[in-house]
Image 1 (cartoon, helix red, strand yellow):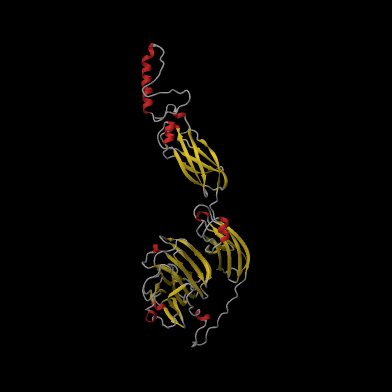
Image 2 (tube, one colour):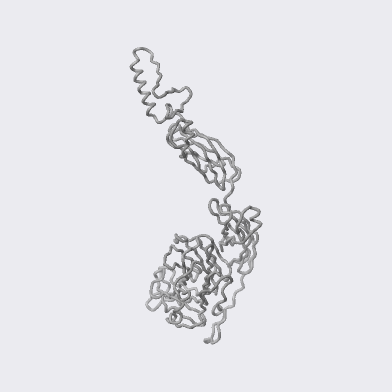
Length: 516
């Protein structure tokens, strides 16, 4: 039973009521008043005159964390003392949130003679950092006045990433960036950094370099440096900026910008078309070059450089022990069909011919390499493919790592991908939620010239490279299930391409490796 009353209020104890009745004629009225008062005392959940009371309470502790403030104490609205109230927390004069007073506090109940739960203990996120005044207000449950319980001064640490862009250097088609970044929320882990040129993101790099100066200066462990070369199509005077991607509370942090002059890439000479079929070995400009040895640190488990000729329709007869092809079913958009007859090999190059056939059906092609002649992929690896394509309107290309069990939720990694008359993009679809892209970048590179496209996939990191230069990497949402390599050349949308649109995707070689 609530025993909180104002000074001078009538005090009652169970079974005892004091009343003064003046005059014999009013005794019966006094008895009625006594009985009414007893009933009110026994059955009321609040003390007499509680309707005029206001909230009360206290602050026990206020502690600052990384972008947060944790408060603890108690609060009671004496008008409804059996019901829990809440407290409002302001930081630097700005409301940061409310914390419910729903924790049992036996000490408060004994002291005030109330029942219910009236303790508060919780955290709120702060938009202000450094030395701040944290004030707490007990909220009224009725139309009474909210009551300020007091203020405390604390120092709140900024949870956003910190770091610096130390250096930017440029050569034709390439930028080299160096710096460091760390996120206080995950101070022992590496951080992703987005690099922009002229305001356009060109790559995401990972802080995988050890920086002893950073670790010593900030009392952290782990790898927080980056020093990498990135492909760019920009030239001339450019502003190169680096932004550290936030994890947890806080926001992304711009590490800095540097202005550099990027030399233009010298145009490649266009080879003259042969006047007659060549009987000599093709040059690099004609077929993209021979397949190189496996990259350092990797063991090749599949390699094909297409030295055996195959006429249209004869690809599986020559390469059936090393590839599976799509044949006779709709492509992804539904506007075209995959045909094995669209594949042929000549002069050390696989040709995937896209066109509209005599029946008006747009036609494309797709293949899957077989490692050791068997179906199935890997849970990590390096995938290299050297190719080029004609800018065929309405058609596109997708190199992808796809689930062995055809389960999209296992993950999907796309590279190179895009319209053949557009630019090359890359994507990492989020495992478990593949409709969302955990990483997506437009590289700005076109399909017209020969390039080597590489996916490096480890349990901790995905990296994407063009001609050996990293264009993006991430450590977030890495696939863990077995995926296999697919290359698809097909229509881009439900609208059919123009009937006269025709051209080729040419593949010089394909390589799959495992770490080691």
